[in-house]
Image 1 (cartoon, rainbow, N blue to C red):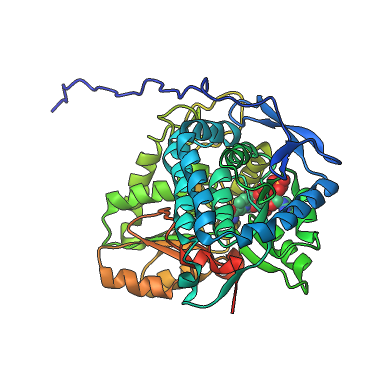
Image 2 (image 1 turned 90 degrees about the vertical axis):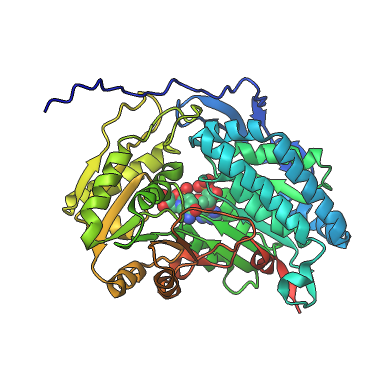
Length: 484
Ligand code: NDP
């Protein structure tokens, strides 16, 4: 019988978020001692929009003397900050949280312009969660000893905090909020490709009348980060980024008595059992790997599917991938935005080539990509062997590697067969199975029937080469306190 029905193709009209309301300066100094300053021995570098390759603003990069100056300002401010009551410190954090909310639209647009992520994500995830982190730790500031079992606490002192480019504002909030609540002062170094929202946060600190020197924000390249962790007068280093730089920092701190938190890479297993609600699982897989173009430390990049449903799940996933909209990060319909930098695009391309070279089957969604900027279309690899580089190394892009398993024991063994241990996902209908598998997985966070779900009250952090120390919730206070 012939199908005579008319086929209607539903398409989306563009829904661009306007950047007209954003008031960026042409040039930003270093934020030290409560004011924006010219660098003493640093440089000035343009920051570009990865979706257009156009310059967004010029940024001062810190040199070694600038780094020293920021640490001195933090040291000078620390006793006064620690001497405030927790209630008073909490009021400043509440003010910062409220100001983030007031400037939410501007922060979301700038985050997308500077980093390439879809504005839907910066608007609905990054900015609200950043405010929520400040609210959460504002509440803890006068209850610190309750967070550590009623023991006496004191701040560590000066915290050196280094953040990456995948969640620039949110990672700044994860670092600053607990450090300040505990009475520490901070020198924060944003990533070189995404300094802008951290600098807007510096403006917010000014607006909140945070005492000068409590927070310094010094953009710079890797050498500024390396200089910061080598400063003799710091008490704490908190780093989020690659495992190789994390190891480098750990070596630099050896024997110095400086407290260290490392939140490093991952190759997280997202495990789908045959009894799972498969359509729901497919949505979770998409969220797990294509959220923020896969530039997520806990991305569900190793998709492990029970063999009996592997073909069905891969078929549904491929169909769903074809409906992802890739393009302008400022369009509210966009699902997958721009790759953060040319270097990251080259890293993704190199690893995907390695996957093909090693014999895995690659399928990339055929979609029209903009002619300028850095882009990578959603990609899936099947017939992946556990030893393939794409099953072992962090790709940090919109690329998922599919492995299969037959039994629960095999799923656990394969999921744990990684140098990393940051996160995992379990998709099953059976509560008992979910708990049993979760307790056997070597991962800091295990999501059940969901993925990439963040909350400021919940601890986040890794095992093995994914690092140590926890951020979020009461556990996130401990790395910033001396407990007696
Ligand atoms: P990095 O680890 O180099 O960057 C993270 C932060 O550390 C940035 O602020 C960076 O500055 C700074 N930094 C770089 N070198 C040093 C150093 N020697 N000492 C102190 N700080 C330093 O990550 P990349 O940007 O190079 O990304 C490389 C890979 O790392 C990605 O492909 C991805 O696999 C992984 N990655 C993982 C992240 C995670 O959340 N787990 C986040 C980012 C990357 P600058 O930006 O100037 O280089």
